[in-house]
Amino acid sequence: MNKFFKKLYELGRLEGFEVRNTSFVLFLIGPSLFIYSLFIDNYDNDKVRIEGAREVFSFLFLIISLLPYFYKRNIKNYYGWLVFISMLLFSHYTIINLLLNDFTIYFILGSYVLIFCSILLFNNRVFINVFLFTVLIHLILNLFSSNVDKETFSAVLSSISLFFIFCFIILNGSATV
Image (cartoon, rainbow, N blue to C red):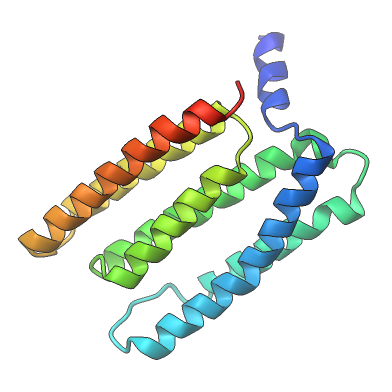
């Protein structure tokens, strides 16, 4: 059992340059998320949103992006886990938004960009596979439980399928163990 926990611990370990790069990307995601959701708020009056979620996630990404500057010594050991968990939570939040807003195009595009960018932040296949599997299942379950018309259903299902096939094949070949 000790080997299992050691492997889990090692999954979250990042090199110094990975921590710096990931921290910078998360620092950019926070304000970008806030601006994008403000744009959607002003663009579409019929949208449904979870109050306060955009602010919470923007603040979360900002805090996680600044952690390497305050905890320089030990951050490399667990920063991968922080990034994985925060991106997984945010991705599932965006999937819930997709369902609440009937899979409208700007929510779909935002979700796909987020999912792909999340995968690029992960440094190993385990994180990529767990992330893609849970996000895919959640997306499909929400799509089947939605009230979208047949054309939208078919378009979203085919785009989800192609997107995830691409992610599994291409990105799994470029990640480390």
